Amino acid sequence: MIITIDGPAGSGKSTAARKLAARLEIPYLDTGAMYRALAYAALQRGADMRQEADLLEVARTATLDVDCGPTHTRVRVDGHDVSEALRDPRVSEVTAFVARVQGIRDLLVRKQREIAADLGSLVTEGRDQGSVVFPDADVHFVLDASLERRAERRMHEMIADGHEVTFAWVSENLQTRDGIDSRQWLPLLAAGRAIIIDTTDLKLSEVVDRLEGEVRSRCRTAAHSG
Ligand code: DC
Image (cartoon, rainbow, N blue to C red):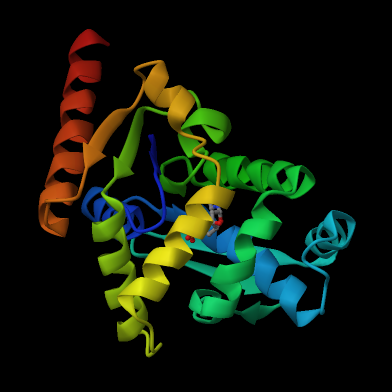
């Protein structure tokens, strides 16, 4: 079973996806971590973030290993576990530059499909998982929330990670990222093929209950019709 969860930064999709995977006892793939890992490698190698050819060269030559479990996605670059370093604000700032290089997207999309083929079942989370990578997934979700709530959540996460940030900085940063990241899940919504959940006024446990309920009801319907 493949379940896709897409949405903007701060919509709560990463934590919800991880918790859903744990409840369903299937692996969880954080595809943002794959883009972040290549951004991390580009920073390490001193690549010019405006030069697509340089970024593509980093992506082609870096060895990226992704380990997915029901409660984690761990990423190694050239043999080093960088999973924690990927949350550094410097990495967050430049990842969008990496993610807009089409050659890099093609490479990672291929890798994501290989991971799914290997594992069989997956809760996968990102921006393009339902629209581009797994259009035939069993269930597609899109999570969204107001900018204010997204900024509030991101700020608390960053403070918990030990970064000193203000609400104003996080909110401005999110708006910039919204502008760079294209809303790749929109075609899925336009076609009525995704379940959209507005998480603005929902607690995390309520979001996960909703996701799990939808998946289980789809499974029951599929079992009856099959
Ligand atoms: O979800 P995140 O904040 O970890 O994503 C990091 C960056 O990668 C962000 O700029 C969006 C981009 N991204 C993407 O373009 N496609 C994905 N499937 C996942 C993330």
